[in-house]
Image (tube, rainbow, N blue to C red; front, top):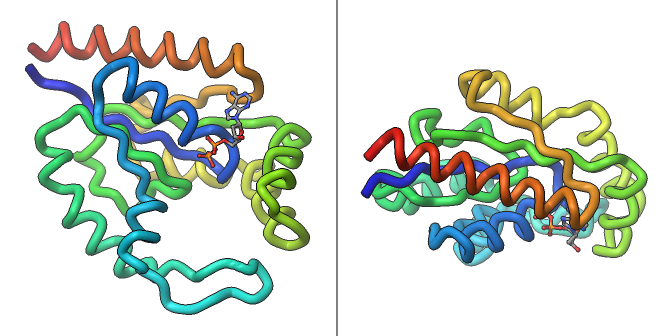
Amino acid sequence: MRRPNILLTGTPGVGKTTLGKELSVRMGLTYMNVGDLAKEGELYEGFDEEYECPILDEDRVRFQVIDELEDKMSDGGVIVDYHSCEFFPERWFNIVFVLRTDNSVLYDRLESRGYRGKKLQDNIQCEIFQTIYEEAMSSYKEEIVHQLASNTPEDMEQNLEQIIQWIEQWMKDNN
Ligand code: DAT
């Protein structure tokens, strides 16, 4: 039985992890959080004092993580969660969802996550400039990239239902 691979992307705090984990439970898919893989592998190249967080070694994330994921991706049925999307092989994903959150809502979420100052401002700006959406549109075929509003629990439920419907249709069409 073939199953699709799904990319969930968007600015930190938009709800990728919450949605991805719930989707994996409901559909029996494998959830992979690339940020967590980088943390587990300690793929860092220093510490950013201003951001008060480790600096990811993007090259090692690219190569090590991609190597690690490659086999899983070819089996299908994987949900990948990451706040960037340009360095994954395009062929991995059957569909890409970019979650979007209104500025004031995102501000509160990131503040309660402990983000302050420049780190908070930069992430809000990333969302205002729809940076990740544009990155997705230039990295994948436009027709497989979809934006989903992710402000309220009702949005999340609606998004889950929509994605599940899409998965079920994909499995009918591809098996
Ligand atoms: P991300 O993985 O994109 O960084 P998250 O899943 O950790 O985001 O969510 C950040 C916070 O927002 C977390 O406290 C859960 C909450 N949240 C996520 N999606 C939501 C939604 N649709 N409605 C209300 N709260 C949501």
